[in-house]
Image 1 (cartoon, helix red, strand yellow):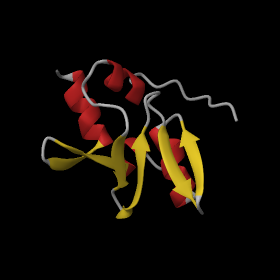
Image 2: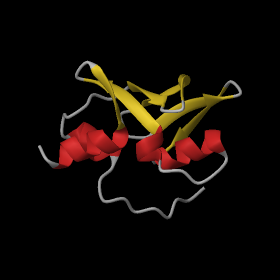
Image 3: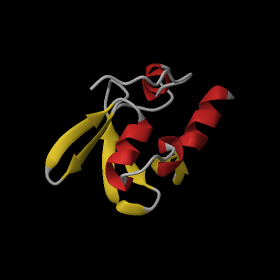
Image 4: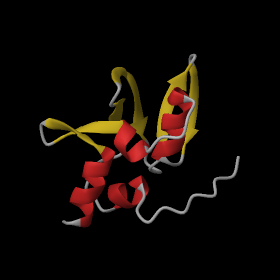
Length: 97
């Protein structure tokens, strides 16, 4: 599958800067039992029905669960500096560093 999205900032950019480490867990904002990880390439890896799927962008991984268009930067959160924050907040912190 070819993705047409051309994001301004990617999770890989954030990892490459050292802002977060690869293989950090991500949790769905709607249900913390839905989880995955951000791999070294900045893609989100999740399991659906026991099958590992890899999504290059947060929104694709979110759509896999919601079956509808959703902002993946708001759907996913991570545990960062002793609190859960949405990827959107992580991106904002990264851009203002």
